[in-house]
Length: 245
Image (cartoon, rainbow, N blue to C red; front, side, top):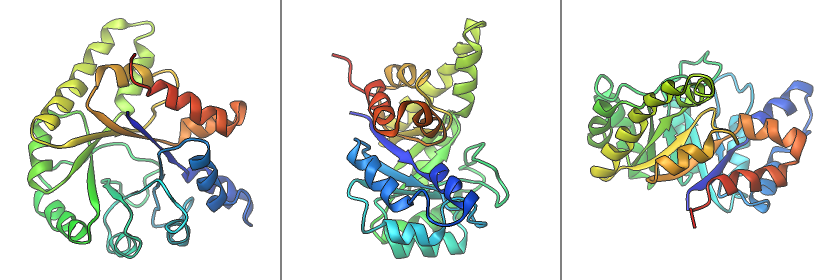
């Protein structure tokens, strides 16, 4: 069963827009779990424009499923993760001013840096995933850097899936995702995925990437919840990830 980790950043964006504590991020995380989420993901950024470092600290004792912290491994981020000790840390190459993640690591060019960071987290007993584009040639270097998993950056997939409604030939580009997933599996790397996955494109991805362990979804899920309700939305996403009978 592919797990659904709900990224709760957008709830924090809403809270921060008004100040105060509405919505209550701690309650949101607990409700997501109660409604069926298999994990909670947060992505604290240096400007704390959504999830704050204190939120991450406060969430740790409350999350009863899997806690995943994403981010660029700056010194402050590393210190936060080591103090919280989540189940998983996902390393992304975002610059501090990035609006959202938009590419994966060049694991070859950043091999030494990633190896040092990953060894620090693994020494603390934290599973490490590396955000990666659908590029087969970067998979081996993710393994040698010490990663346990890769998280496929699915932004390009989501865009090509939408375009394929009128231009079916575009979906041929999906082969890069399948090839990257196979390459990871062949050398013992588990596979996560995330970015712009939604109720329209998630099922297709799941069906064609059987190695998929976990997806992290935030923006689209929160947008759907505005219309459909949070509990119903989480169940709809889990249904897209259900195993084929």
